[in-house]
Length: 498
Image (cartoon, rainbow, N blue to C red; front, side, top):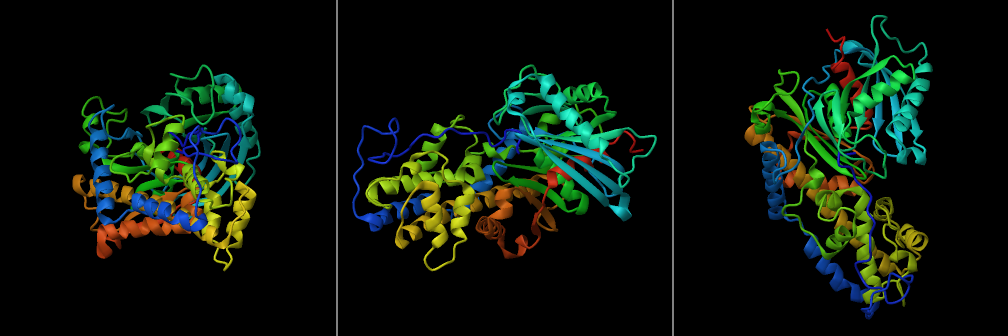
């Protein structure tokens, strides 16, 4: 996902269990239950107040996002967002021809793709892909072991190329490498690994160029192929969407984690005033904001703070922990646990499963919000099966309201973040953004599968920009942008382009 990634958090209880929690999870403080479901109303009312995102709050968030973007562009290691230079200054035009590959590595699985491009007339003629699981032992092995495994699977995929895909005789196979781990990019086709995340602990890679590691592994496998573009998934998504629509200026990933990137004029990037990137000819560049690290002006609750303090990276990635798919279900779980402990929402004792961090997932709360039956049967089934809670109809209604409160806040804050990027572009760029059609490409399972989230995001954008200006801002769902986008960037930066 983002270069920082969603990460993995190990939660701890933020509220007290009187009964129902396993040994080791109890607190010396005893909670007092009273009143059943009706007693949960004050907690819900207070939650709504803390999570409220009226227009003034959205404006503060958008303004703070724009300010943090500017601060991050001013200097490395400053107070703003990371604002990582992608070194991508050559975007797909639609005229690319030939066979190109993509490798998408961002977690415990990786995908390999091949794409046959037919230029302006043919565009994407054909595609094929394969997903491969990485053996767990390789996640803790050596650099050579991991990359040799990846290269060997890639070689097997190349062997199955088939007659539908044609490589020009004078060309060597080229591949775009989507690598969604923290790297310090040094050119469009090189980057130094900062650290492994997402459960990886590969030895011998830190401080090395990940493209060199892959190229060397492909050589050892006898694979005549080289990397021509190194990107993260957000940058690849922007490139993939831009291939079909020249008005795409921003890309956002809203899935397990979240990130955003946009196209910037290089002369408004102060930290480019020193040595220029390798091409020396950049006018535009995709900037990876790493907006998951944003934290200013956000309406946070005790549940957010407790979840953050229990995570493996306390004080970091606050925006991501507020709006992305990995965390929404956990926030809801913590709220329901407090209600269960203090108001007997689910009966005499808190269900034992409800005491377990991350038991309730974001797909669970999404499914509950889709339940339109009179008796909220789906809600009751999920509560019973996932957290072991017996629930009355009034309890189920309370649960749905909690889910909606947290998802509404998340979607509206994400919308404010988008407007913050657009505001910065409008105020600092040489061309108007709000006066013409501007497309924001969206990808990720959270955005793709959660209709309420999408609606809340769009509502926030419309409120902030007004009905007329917002008509020019098109939020477009781009499916599988990172895979195709990496292949397209390999084509756009091909050594045979001329």
